[in-house]
Length: 474
Ligand SMILES: Nc1ncnc2c1ncn2[C@@H]1O[C@H](COP(=O)(O)OP(=O)(O)OP(=O)(O)O)[C@@H](O)[C@H]1O
Ligand SMILES: [Mg+2]
Image 1 (tube, rainbow, N blue to C red):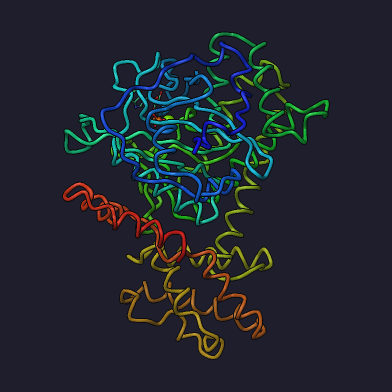
Image 2 (tube, rainbow, N blue to C red):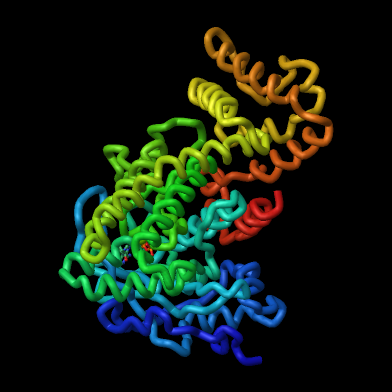
């Protein structure tokens, strides 16, 4: 049967922008192609029946990179740890193609680990297999947690030996295909500002609005409206990360999507405990991108984006756009945390108070962030309405003694107080909500290592597949 990936209706939207925005490249040829992961949920999103798509189809398209469109290495710069870097761009990936989902939206197939490009500098253009495995896990877990994220369409092991300082080397290689709304980054605009090209910024803005903010297309102040909405989308995203206990790790402007979607899962980690200073990347020595810094770092990146946008948008309009960030972040974060605690809506003051006590409890104990919510979900019962000291009184919790006990008691009392206002039906809804907002499986680092170890030692992929299944279903 013909390969369905070669017969999708590719829409050359980015390609149509022209050579100022990308270079045509050719994928590397690899000595081996073993399909390690295929995401059938995405096939369904594309209107394909997974039954009719074989592993060989995946390998032809996303391992050997047979294609009906040119491969485009996208150009971008970026601020990395505060320093401007004009030597970036797709150095190990390219835009394979763009297609419409059954929802009518345009999506990218973007590769990672597919060989050198003009932007590789001295690097090899490759992705390690472990890096690919980690990215698959991050995207699936975040998706389960309701975060607006890219997904991984495929991961193909490619049989090369790579040398990396952060993995025992030689280590195995892979080519990954990412499915996302767009690979246009804040840094895509920053590069055009660097070259002083207001004309290209305008053209790119029109493109972004046409495909990703089409409801503003006919508005006279559409550029300012776009920026305001981007600010809100990014604020929402970072609130989702914070509630999910996720630390992205490398919030450079080349890793910030112009659609406000989360992507690029390198050194990320889910926080084990609520530690505001938790830092995911070992090379982030000052802790710039630590867990608690994420909101202001993202806001700062949005502010940096004003530099290129100011070439074509009024500065005051951009300032008022940025002003939307704090409110959007706070509202979304508070609501998500209230949901994680099982409540639908609470009056503002009560929600703030409960959130404050919850954070106090989490921060001042060795309690695992995800363990706490998981426990609450498992143990929640209507009897708690009758006795506050029963709330989360379980063997699963570490011992609370001395002043730590006070944090637990004040949290229990308030939680109990709000429970009292609920009807039996509302208590049932609460149970369902706890399940929806608190997945059983959150892939902390040790769990990811536990999945990688059998792959590394004996090429056993079962624990990886079983983790993904549990992420999806529990
Ligand atoms: N092994 C490599 N070979 C060539 N270029 C690389 C390699 N690793 C990273 N780069 C380049 O370094 C820059 C920063 O890399 P970063 O890790 O943020 O992105 P990435 O993970 O390669 O890709 P993406 O942002 O699309 O997920 C990018 O320009 C990237 O292309
Ligand atoms: Mg990147």
